[in-house]
Image (cartoon, rainbow, N blue to C red):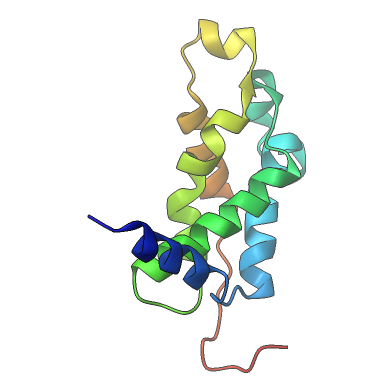
Length: 130
């Protein structure tokens, strides 16, 4: 259990977590793929998505990755953080079509396909930030 002061300190700590441009772009690509699946060779998702994740989805995905980095004792976010949190952050941001509901296709299934299709960037942790 945490006290309110400890929780506030953790929240402040997330603000100083470094997020590489490639990590942020990865979060944007995941969200964009839910809005424009054909552009990512995900044509099969089209009939199931009425609306994809908005740009706020990528902002919150990066914020969640910062929080996970803090919990894991790091001062930087990794693409794996974004990848692991994608379903939890984005599932409620997708609006599924009636066809998806009729065929019992879940948001998690669609997001799993997106995460699998969009390769996570490789980041050299030894390089200096630009």
